[in-house]
Image (cartoon, rainbow, N blue to C red):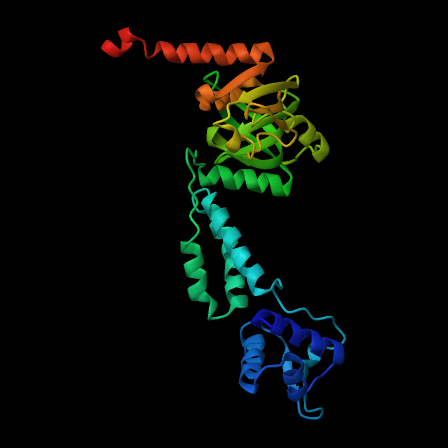
Amino acid sequence: MSKTARHYKIEMLIRQRGHISFADLQQELEVSRATLKRDLEYLRDQLGAPIEYDRDTNGYRFGREYRGQKHELPGLWFNERELYSLLMAHQLLSGLDSEGLLSRHLQPLLDRIHDLLGPGGDSETRALRKRVKIISALRRPVASEFFERVGEALIRRRRLHMRYLTRGRGSTSERDVSPQRLVHYKNTWYLDAWCHSREKLLRFALDAMQQASVLDVRAKDVAMKQVEAEMDAGYGIYAGGTRQWATVRFSPQAAPWISREEWHPEQEGRWLDDGSYELKLPYVDETELVMDVLRQGEQARVLSPASLAQAVRQRLEAGARQYTETELAR
């Protein structure tokens, strides 16, 4: 039985029986006297459990101030394997961090996990964190002031006033929005919000915010089903527009990788007789899908719709013109 499991069982036995002797605890846990003494000291001194020895009953019980109340030891109860999994998750979240903001808020949880693992877990914890590496390629960092204000508006359900740069048009606008959810996609943070200027749901990149302030005005609540239906229908980060289906065929060389990838939750894939792989997936804006198909180079070919195939072809031809003999001779 792990140390964490023993601590939980000690607390459970005292709660169920009201009091229990040292000998009975030792028999239930199947541990040595020294181990049980260390467990009891750790529960009282480190976890603040209100356990006291009662001479009249020759047993351990909860203190008088806790009698008649349901007592739970502080913290979350996991076995050691689950605690190390939580540390792994903490390391993953740190890899997604924005200027250390998430780590600061997660530190109390991390400290609590270290307490539950005990003094002996520190070295293992450090070793684990060294053995998990997060590579965030092409990450667009978000200033902590914007991340915090968006988070505050989201949690407090308040409107947010912001100055926003629409990079595609090169224009800046000011607007009030009602935050609905934060989205992390391809190492970048986005905010799904109801725009009160456009009167519709829109998606904003946090790194494109130039100014943001939380307003003392209640945010408009949009049902999450509506948010998901409107914002998650298409391919990638683009939302809104008419939904279409694309069919892309990948060569036998690329097929082993593509067949294991999820391009969209609703995608449909099938192997073809020549070893190639055909993928069907929905999209509402071709911009990102075109870029991802182009990344596959000669290993991918758009079969339908014709408009998407034409868009990929035009981009390929434009790219090829950058490498003509005349250009290379300069």
